[in-house]
Amino acid sequence: MDPRDRQLEETILALLARTRPGGTICPSDAARAAGSEADWRELMEAVRQAAARLVDAGEVEVTQGGRVVDLESAKGPIRIRRA
Image 1 (cartoon, one colour):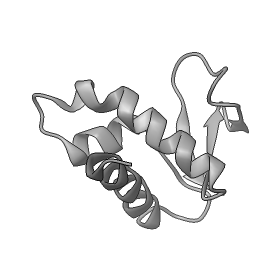
Image 2 (cartoon, helix red, strand yellow):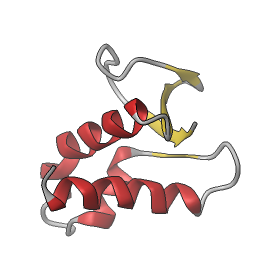
Image 3 (cartoon, rainbow, N blue to C red):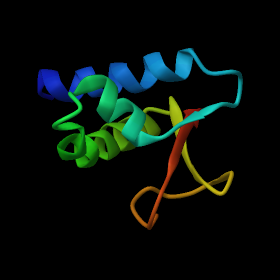
Image 4 (cartoon, rainbow, N blue to C red):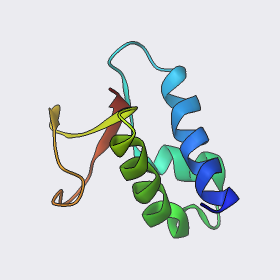
């Protein structure tokens, strides 16, 4: 895994650590925190991939409308929360 990938995972976990129990973050929150105002959109796919690795590790869940979804089949906006 490349250092940027690990940084994105750490960013997701750090943001979640600041939320209330059961709280969620948007992948764009992690992209903005890891990138700049100019390039955060370019990080969105990498953030989704980082979230997928964290799901596989059992650390987070991906939700839509408050329900846990499979990231591979999810279409549209998602949220990330601690598992």
